[in-house]
Structure formats: C-alpha cells, structure tokens
Length: 454
Image (cartoon, rainbow, N blue to C red; front, side, top):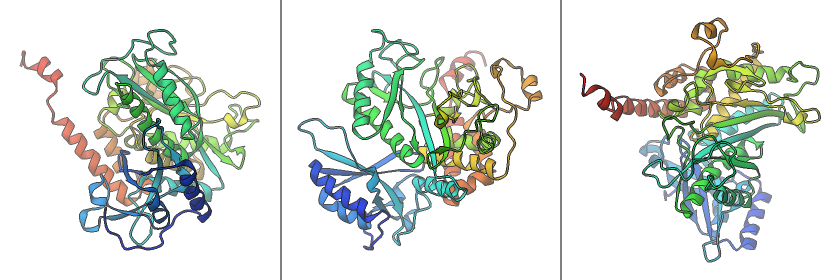
C-alpha cells in the first residue's frame, strides 16, 4: 500500500459511518473488501481487517495509482480509496469460510479532492448535472447476458438450450438460482432469470434503481456470476461475442428520469405517452449514439456482436415495438406510469457501467437542454431495408469497428465534457492501442483463406 499523509478526507455522512461500524460488529465480519474499477471497468480489490475500517471511512486507504490502468503516472501516483458506507454488503459465504463484506470506494487525491480518473466520480458528476436541471433520480435497469462454458480455454457449452427453455437441456437452472440467491443476499433485487437465445447463454435481471447504486450492483453482479460458476466447476464470461454464428451477449439499459416519485418521462396526453423531456432525452441519445459507441462497446470483440442479423441493434432509430431499433420504448400499460422508460439496446455487458451510464445520461440531458427534436419512430424491421432506403429515411448506423468508434469519440466535445480531460485522453490512447494491436494480427481465417491461393 502507498504511504499517504493522514488527513480527515471523509466523503460520507457520520451517521452512515457509525451504522456500518455497528453492522460489522453485529454481523461478525472478519474481512472487509474495498472495491473500485479501473478505466476499462475491471474490478480492483484489496482487503482490510475490521479494526482498520473506521480509519478507512474517515481518512481512506492509500494505494499506488500508477499500477491501475488509466490512472496517474508514477510521479503522481499516490491515491486514496475511501469506502462508501451505503455500499456495505455481506459477500456470499458458507459455514467455515471467512465472513467478508464488500464496500465500494470513491477515489480521491491525497489532499482529499475527487480524483478525475475515477469512473465512479464521472457518474457522480453526470448526476450533479441532472440534478441541476431539476431531476432527482436517473433510474436504470440493465439486462446483462452471459455465457457458461466448461472452462476458460474454449467455448464448449453446458447445454444446447434456447430462449426461455425449461427442459433438461438447460443444465444451468440451479446455477442461475444459486446466483440469484447470492445477489439477493447482498441486497441486489432480482426480477427474473432465464435461458437466453444462444447455447448456454443466460440472463439474470436486476430490478431498476438509481444509476450510482446500479453501477455498483453491475460490477458486483459480474463478479458473483463468475464466482458461482467457478465454485460449480465451470466458467462464466461476459465477452460480447464468444461464439461465431450465435447471438452475442448484450446489456439493454432501461432508463427514466424522476422528480421525487413522479416519472418525468410520462405524459398521458401524448400519442406515445412520452413527455417533451423524454423526447429530448431520446433525441439526444440518438444524435450522439456514434460518439457514445466506444464507451458502451469498448472492445474489439464488441463489434463482432454489433452486426445485422443477431438481435444487436446497429441502426440509429427509435421505436415502440421494433427491436431492431437502437432505442425501444416499451408499450405503456394504464396505471403503470412509473414504468415509462427508454431502452437503449446496443451496449454489451463488458463495458464500464459507470462510464456508460454517465455518458448516456449526458447525451440525454444534452437533448433536453438544447431542445433536440425527436424524429418519427421506425416501426419497420430496419434489417430488411436496403442501404438506399435507410439513407432516404436518414438512418445512420453505429461504427463497425473499434477503430471507427474511437475516431468518433475523439472528435466529441460532449464526451470530453462527460468524461473529463484525464479519462477522455487516457481512454482514447488505451483503446487506440488495443485497436492497433488487433489490426496487425494475422488470423486463422486469413491463413486458411489466402495462404493456399495467393
């Protein structure tokens, strides 16, 4: 651990800190895990003993930020992790195991200022902008899909089941149930779970909640899914497209803005039951979708999923029923005004949720603030339109490669504002390097296709 001069750097309410310390005693906690993510959303963790927690809550724990992807260089690498007491949750455990809790941290500099390279801080800033515009809450409900394989060395599935299957073909029914119990035991509400379209592909859906809590829940979900799989002798992956010829794994993101208990997206008098603000929000996300792509689909492999024909929307349009559109508005049910929402359908579950939620929010708020006009919905299957027909309707597509997506991002003033200069520059450099590393590779496909004939 880095040595950082002590200073009262607390970022939370004293009453919340007191409650956590009492909970540690009452729960018989033996170890505390402190979590945060690097720039790409990889979970980072270190452990402290319960007697250190009070100091951690009040002053933080120092560490070397130069060893974290996207953080500071070595000459200015001292960072401080301060646990957020509202994220206290007991990890799944069995009798005889170490009883452990996890807490998610805010990262600050040694002088106690929020660190501009912390993805969680990026989302906090986006939520501050939202509140300055008169909204109280961004509710988010992501749907994460994943695959279960025999091991991490290949893609041998556990079953050949299909969408919503409930037969002996679905070998992971009990695995999903165990994962659901573990998540709910950590305070993450689950609405439902099921087998997805691909062989050995699954989905467990968390109940919507505010964006910061949901980003914390998302990184927790990914770890718990993997840990439960590993304990049962198999491997879970959130890789967007692990099997050629099969659907990839997506993370549809349901979003709505609330003022108190009132859904700011609902308008009973509108044809689509959408308020003016909802229309501006959707228009903003459509307008900036290409700039956003490198955030919600950040890997080379992400763009193997974003191709026509495999349920991953690639065309920038919105609709009420049409699942080939980038944004879908689930149909309004009388008496369910709070359920009015926009479903953004192209992200994948391997993105950094803090950055994805923050950038989607900024794009939506930009549309509200600047009164963007929502185009007409596209109710026809966009995959069935010719390129000329899409052009005539003004429908553009998302970037086709990570390289194209990074170039779009690099010219985006809005994304620079959303991410801040530190993350914006580091993220682009990091992803350009990934793209360059990939594009110079010789693939097995090339060797088989060209070597015998050229």
